Image (tube, rainbow, N blue to C red; front, side, top):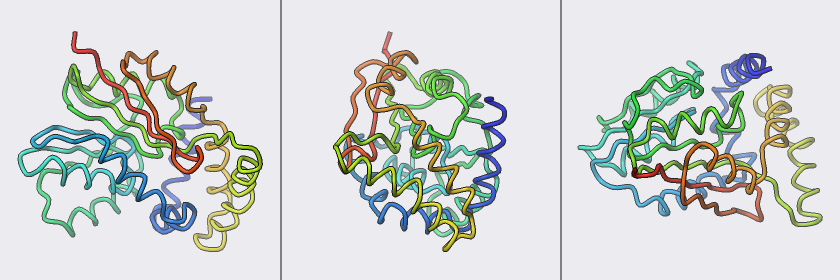
Length: 236
């Protein structure tokens, strides 16, 4: 099952990369950008730090981290879709940033030594991996003691009526938008499935703790349709 999901996700993102940014803005009504800005404010990223952006996709969070750590810091963006990384490369070439490295790799087996990064982020990518806990454990492994892991992801709203509207939108409207604007009905139908199956906020807190993080907290956005989870690697 894990291998099947791995192949399916790779196929989806290899197909939708050209319209990925446009569709993200359309589907989320551009709110994903404000969510990421708020998350960056919460992180208080330090100058000269080392950061890893897992499942970096087209690189927006990677570039934001690169600006935050400054010229002496370093940021690595990792994704297993070569096509998504091509878009990230194009964005990088349009900036003066020289502290970014983009790598084709697997979130389930991060190609880095233990205790390498001060920050590890994953934005709208955890729901697409074959095993959530394995990826969280890998994020914890490559963090330095005291380092911070941050996950920004879609979530499960709980308000009556609002919840029904949300799931109706994701199940029926989002795939239609994918078909109309990106020619990708089945890919966006699958992304709806991955969103529905993703753990709720409290369950994700438990997974963070299972992976070895401490001081785990979350904050919801827009009535719970998205959330940021934060955790720290123990210092000793």
